[in-house]
Length: 329
Image 1 (cartoon, rainbow, N blue to C red):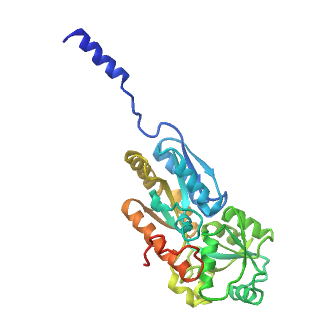
Image 2: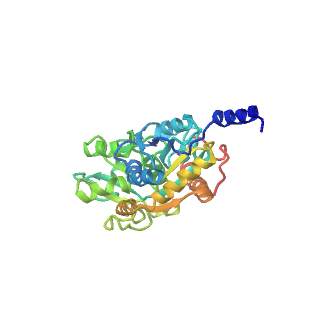
Image 3: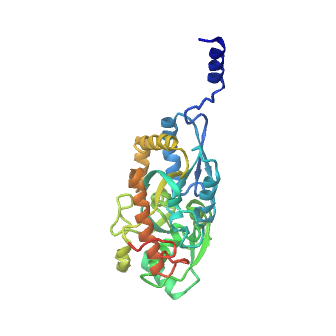
């Protein structure tokens, strides 16, 4: 072979870019809500096993605000390289009808739907409300005077409020906080009278006796809090919306490379079966789903359909689902 051709070939090999396998460095997991809330609890429970499966550290960053819209926009504005992902809850699926944001999970890729939860209505231990009927009677007698802890439009408390409004008078003053954790702390400090929340955020404090759960948003009691009655015991009209509840998952920009998506999907599929994570989910009353691919896409679409049309039918939606192209289920 001509010596010049050999030299040229060698230079071409040296000059060719080296594409390292993902991930080369630490990854950022952005939690949609503040520390101590249900989403944060699930994220931090699965994170160690995900780090081990991925082979690199995952730095967890709480970035709350806008009922999850700020963190969702942050992840979508990050480079499409898989080094920034979202530990998210259900909220973006409601942002369109609530006029909060144009971005929902249809614009992202679901790495894994880790699990779903059951919601509860909580009050401080010393609250005068001994059951859900006491609370609803007071709300009816004093419209607008009872303060409800909220996480903003499209958050879990506001959605549950809309569902309850379909069954009874529910004129309350919603006080927004940056996540369920801060909201529950504020409730215990007397800033609000009650707060609907995910059972995973409330279960430990209910068991410790610092707060009480008046009802589970479910057709029947759940194993985590077996003595807490189902909301249908007091409001049978709400049964048509049930079962309903929050969900928790891992999401990236839709245009992240397919091989990176596959690596993340495999890592979180493995992490979701970690014994420590499974134990925490069971103790918090959550159902592990470990769902990815088309199955996750279908789940997200159905959940959105059911919920946004429930909001529309109760008059809580600011934008009709029909205008957004979301068909009635």
